[in-house]
Image (spheres, protein in one colour):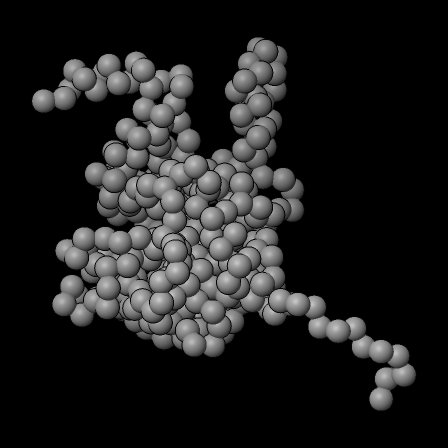
Length: 305
Ligand code: G1P
């Protein structure tokens, strides 16, 4: 018996409420839908107005309080590492020329030494496998996962909305939105339980079901907060839909053991993995820019039918 009193367990000290400090960015995908643009350039570097897609995702994570940024890359993706790194010649040239605004912007977007890690997914075995490649960096902590293809325009960054929700209910949180029935086969789909405001209890998950088999039209969008136990299930490397190791299947294995919710987030999501979605994102972000919106609106009028 210990001869001194043990501290009482803290209220809500369950594993599931640990603060989310780390984010994983799976950026190893080939980007075949944007060939030839993505032949030699990562799809995550495609710019919406003047920022590459991956930078929107990193900025969103940072604004949500993320402190460690873990990229799961692949061959041909070094432009992403360069993008977030110091560019000595460029920065000293901007300094010499007095281009303060540009210099500030570049300084602001850089990732600090030690807050970024890169690891490679050697084989394209699926999203679940990509996330599993980052397991050692997670070091037993809960993680956020952000898919840069899903660009979300919102007042409060989507991941921040999710972290706030997670602080309330604990466990795992997915970003969800309702999609037309014809589109359910493109997404992970939630089998919904009780709905409480903008939170839906997740009772099951299925990856890319046929419309007739889909348990709802609540689709999973590429933002996740996951407890570290997900890595145990990913480690089983079960092959799922499309012959790939699916994140959806590993998440499904957590249901019933940990709290699991979908959050219908405030904001608009653009599917920048598709050409139409990408073009729409460009319009929405350009129209919203104080320095471009007015002139761009005039340009659009010339093309409207
Ligand atoms: C991935 C996930 C899917 C999710 C989607 C969101 O699919 O596997 O569950 O709904 O992202 O964009 P992908 O679009 O990579 O095929």
